[in-house]
Image 1: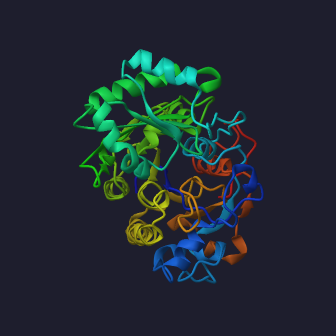
Image 2: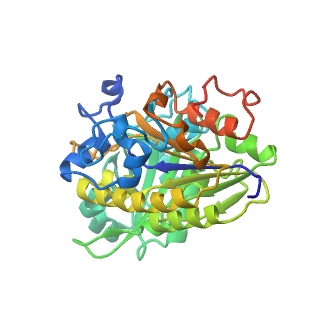
Image 3: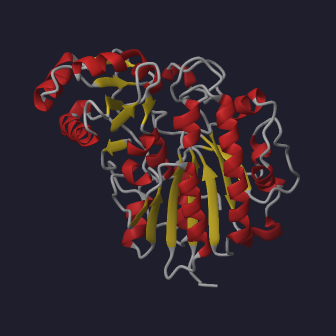
Length: 399
């Protein structure tokens, strides 16, 4: 044993577990419940490890039974911030509640923004400028983009300015340059949470996105998070997947890239196997349930991705040490069985496991419904014995 503590916070992207009471304010379809509906669509899911941890105790999920003595603390959390996007969800679970929501553009971006973007990039013009599905919009406008060279600029229900270009018409490097220009433009009242480069390739009728070359240009957190707090207090902070982009690298000591779930899960396993030389906080995002399947209304693919994640979780459970804590949660929903392709305003599941829990965890130790994702941050800090030193949030620990 190293004697050093570790927390692995793993976000199962978009794995919401039921609509929050204020769902209508976010223009969601009625009755969103991503995990429940995916399981029903797939006629049950085979998630034996998540079942052992207690996922089926949180809600009825076909194929995932309730267990009398789950291995983990289990429950769900509401989002206190006004939002249902990636940045808001991750910032809140890191202890930073978003008081001022990011701007959204249901009717497209104002002409002033578009004109400034065209003038500064010298791109000639833009296509689309409206909320759209990323795959649909390149199918619809990809050939026009190849004719004109104009970038496809679009948004969603989230606070995002997305730019799609064909890699043979506009180099990926040029696309990144245009995104950097947009990021510098979009400040003040138009400070969207993310500018996203969306390169694609292929021929008309068979365009496809180059997911491995996607790049997010976020904004720095609007206050202190547990990442920066822990980094300043001799705890190594490690990001896996898109976490580094979400936090603009603030408070992150080591970056493990990973555009795919497979690579991210391999990185998690490799870190678990190591013996740390200091306390460590590992923050990971498994994005494919959201990007590959939720936004594309592919419930079968969503379920298959969950089953692959579950198999890896089984390995982690066997490898974790007594001083390790694994927290599994989500950042929002994205119910692929309902109309639309946007995120859904949902509760998120919480499962917290450590080998040191032994027989202490039982059904009587449900953590219930937490008032904020920020309870995750408080629990991480308590594990590292920083219970009362981070004052950014009034959240409470569940460990």
